Amino acid sequence: MKSNYWEEIMKKLLIFTTISVAAFAAACGSSTDDHSGHDHGNTANTNAAPAGPLTLTNAEVPQRIKDMMAARGEQDAAAPQVRITAPVDGSTVESSTVRVQLVVGGDLKGYKPGMDPETKMGNHIHVILDNQPYEAYYNIDQEFELRNVPDGEHTLRVFASRPWHESYKNEEAFDVVKFTVKNGGANLDLPATANNGQQMSNANANT
Image (cartoon, rainbow, N blue to C red; front, side, top):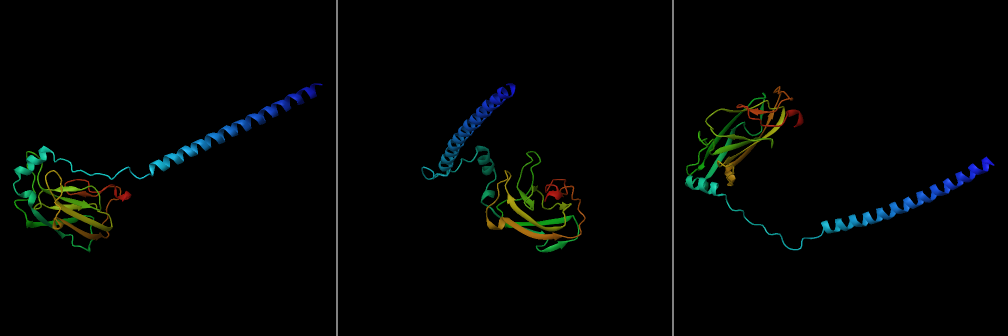
């Protein structure tokens, strides 16, 4: 008698479980279908063409920059020429320290790199090694070195800049060379730097 009783109970539990699982599966299927349809709708809306043409506008030059431009006379109309004389393009340097030399010429109209001791601003040359953090080079008559440069090919870029870091856009205001460091012995756990300590790269191990 007890055996039949428990068999009946087990049958009812099995039927209840089967019905519950089926109902849950149906609900999930319906939810998935609805969600999928909703996502497709969002995708279609996201990829839809804009309602009209995009309009670009020129932002107003900040008044502080206008004042600085006025105080500089004709310098903003200058066409500086910047040339890298060292390292020579295509050269090999057998040291992790690379000496950098620049020559600035052209139609300068008073443009000359240099930092104002009071404002800590001034015309300068941006020096960039391998698209890494740049150094603002203010006095091209002073020695400039790249230190702890790892072995391999490197790209050095320079361009003339205004005190507020806006570059000159004439073609000659920019120069680039490629050079190779061989057996330099750089510490790959440390970044490359300028001789003033300014970081010129992320950690060499990650470059």
